[in-house]
Length: 265
Image (cartoon, rainbow, N blue to C red; front, side, top):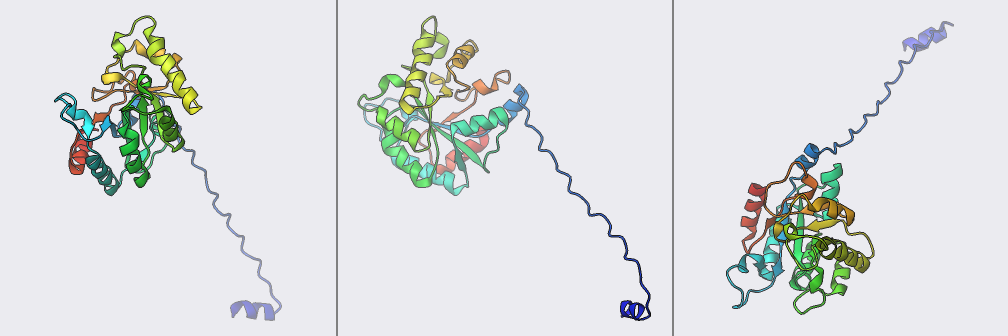
């Protein structure tokens, strides 16, 4: 009403200056550190290691039993992970997080399978697909195509399905025993064979028996590998990318598996 009266009397009021709008200041995302201490701090994601997914037989001795998980038990373990809200990641995704700080989903877990036994494809793979889970398969090449082991076609299908294929030597000889030509026979040549099989670089390696030494690192690098997975030994903070920890999963309930994951990582 006041504005109308002023105009009606022939007066005019200069408009008030409009205060400048605050401009948003872009906040730069800090670049993740890539020194050994930072890499070690990020290498705390749970990594599970499976071997044989099959029903035990009377021929399996006491030493073999911890490495065998019945398909029905494996299915319950995967259900427990899903119900607990875990999200599986590939080995490549986990290593990108460890080395460069790449973001991972909430409650990540890496599933790994060693040696290339047949049940990993016939029994475990369908369960993984049912949950839309990812996994990494560390393949020992000497067994490919032999009875009871993965075929080359199955390895290729796993890769095409979004799984990660990693190297696991030619015949599972322990890395600390290598001399001379062993570095080519056990690491370089099997890695090249897997690369020809899947059609792209192989960058991850798992130590047979989890046994390693620092002498292996330059040989692994020359083969194009960029990270190594051991078993339950302590992470070496001088070489964290080459000593990523895993726990072997025996035939335990889903609840027990979740407890073991909480206390181990």
